[in-house]
Image (cartoon, rainbow, N blue to C red; front, side, top):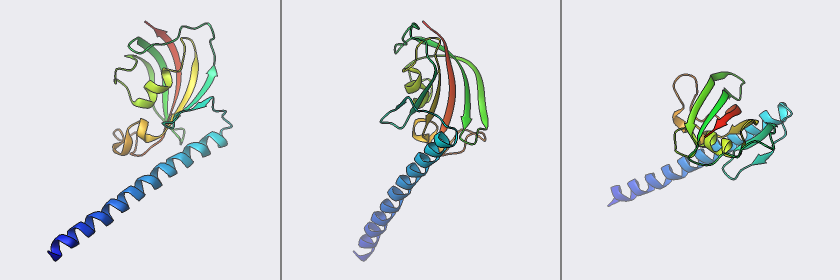
Length: 152
């Protein structure tokens, strides 16, 4: 019986420590993002409930809106908040189909064809604690410079 109480006690303490670390981590990422925005004099167009910062850098009021399910082609540069580029190119995918990380999908859904934007988001919308290979460490906020080329 003592062993059971010790086990339950250990599990409760473990759960508290893990949950505190997650809160600290998200707070740290939030601070990293805010510092990056401030240090680079960026003006956030919109901050979503998920933590995405959307910064419209070139508007196209007459551009076609993008709808979920459409094939979207974008030019992009992906960076860490250290400004180290980890990927760049042109890429096509179906918006809202789960083919890309959440922050990419969420940000591009706000854009029109011909627009350019910078998306900055926490790791919870990117690669999370696992990261992506050697280029993207776990728990890394990400920045993407995006241009929407087409949507069909």
